[in-house]
Length: 542
Picture (cartoon, rainbow, N blue to C red):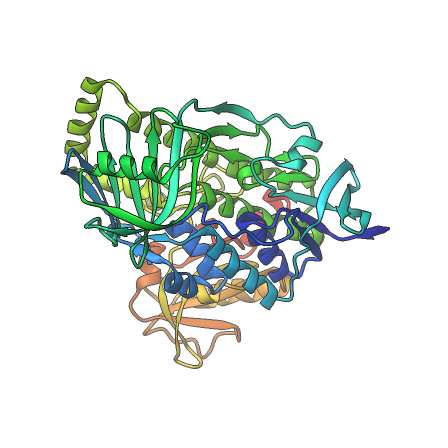
């Protein structure tokens, strides 16, 4: 049987589900398949950082995640029964200033329910067994219990994990290495004084051991083991590790998912192969240090989905626009690989002298505010940006005013949220809520005066007329500004606390175009008509 769809998603884990939710929001015909007969029931990746929470907030799911997960506001490092230092995560520059500990199966359950609420359905027990492509599209052979079928699609998203069938069928090398060292992991209920509100890392001459609290005394415990004691770890071995590393009276019960594992550090060289795109563990795997893996994968397909949606809708002039996915996301994972690999090597030091030097250095470094800030920014992924990517525009075109040169927000950054008031209804609304429709959003801020208001209204009207359904325009004005005589009947938001104006450095009239994934396309000081068209022409959107 031959079938057609616009996009085929292979793999229905968190990364594939993110792509499916985004495509469903964009109204793109697609299918999502998974070789498993049933959804995942294992906790796997358990840390959700703030940039992923930003994405879930865009989907309207942030509150649900916070209700079900455990919000950790700090992490501490201990050695030989003494605290070396810690990191206050509440200082993360985000509304989501914490590490959310939530089992991966719960993350998937929330995303599956959301996808179903949007009208989507997942084809379980459906396996990709063949693949070919040409300039016109992709042809995939699928296998189920009832037989095989052929699906023709425009694009394919490979989110089928570390053992990616897609990667194998395309002959893509997964360059990298497996670290020849064993780790042990288990999810348990803990009886002891280890904190239920902090991530606790214990350093020891035999290796590290880290406690991640799920809440209600449930913990994910991960530790390095110098030598395996058998084919599979035992409860006795697990208890011995805890006793040795923590030097605290801790016992556990209700063990789940006890296993050995080895760390893989790998990445494909190209995230795009013709009309096929790799995301998540199919594209990159690395040390679990810092809980970066699932978060990086979620952001992969969040970046990709809207771009494929534009291509399917016929808004892309040149297929090279889709190369921006690799150019933006590959460097992010490459940096994650480097940093998590370095952190793991540091934790696994075996030489007693080097261990002592590490511990003293760590204690000193964690006392420095600059280290605290950099560490928070890196782990939380709150400062991930695409400033060097091909879609960040403004400065070279002369729109990017010199006062932004050292500003904390630039093209390629994630947008800054603010609480505003809808002028018509006088209801309070977060900017995030206004940006939820999956399209471009043009913010027009009037600055400190009203003299630019007619020009901003003209830009708003021009944009609304030229790009219906592609760009949504929001006029953001100071509380004292009058809009009654303007030729604009669209969205008007009042910035009563001046939060948006301060965030976007809008002392004078300013335009900020936000991409469908929440990143800033351009910022224009004293904007002019025609700049949206000029930007779209530049990046290849019609």
